[in-house]
Length: 327
Image (spheres, rainbow, N blue to C red):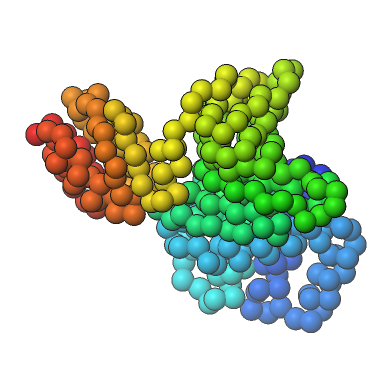
């Protein structure tokens, strides 16, 4: 089954997705004719799920064409040189394989989440989107969201990465709740400015203005309230008690990484989110601590400043394979 990621949308059967991909491949083939187009239109009109599957694959294919080659290679194996229309047909059949046969694995991959989301950022990119209600959502590096507004609620589904949300008063009457939905649960905004960062194990929330309520998806306990200046971490079953938040947690929105007695190993793990390739350190420097403000827009400069602050060397095996070691 394949889902549209909206909680109110029923899933689309994988067989329907596969059929839609076959129709797309047929229409992009060199010998497609008017009869094929008419038959496809008839199939799309036969059931609402057929049309939904068609539109989802069209949107996915459009993102695929816009994506850099190194990103699409994660999802689709390269094919031998062919005419553009035939290559498009083969890519679409590849989408069918992704959507059906390999669906459980691929839908959890970073490439899928970035390519199939309503809004996403690449590695090192930080970008703001303005929602229909005036809410501003800043996407951190390699992040992806879907947006679902209807008569009952305003929802942002965080599929990957981290966002900074500055909510706006809902122009609709009555006002609809604003909710960020992560893998582990929901964050209900109460007129606020806050960040949500999603990892595989947990979601991290920090509030800078207003308040939020955290509700883990499988928790029996009531929601946990966070006020301005507080942060928390929650799994799908439990939210940790509130603790003080630091302004440094939103420093990435200004293109900065603020390190306060941070271990080199953790510093490099954070910096690696903003650059492609492998960034690592040897065990003898992993526990050294660093304090300072570093540029996320220029990670090589940040590494050079690390070398100035600590007795370490930066070894560039290539631009994409960097090791920090003892001097």
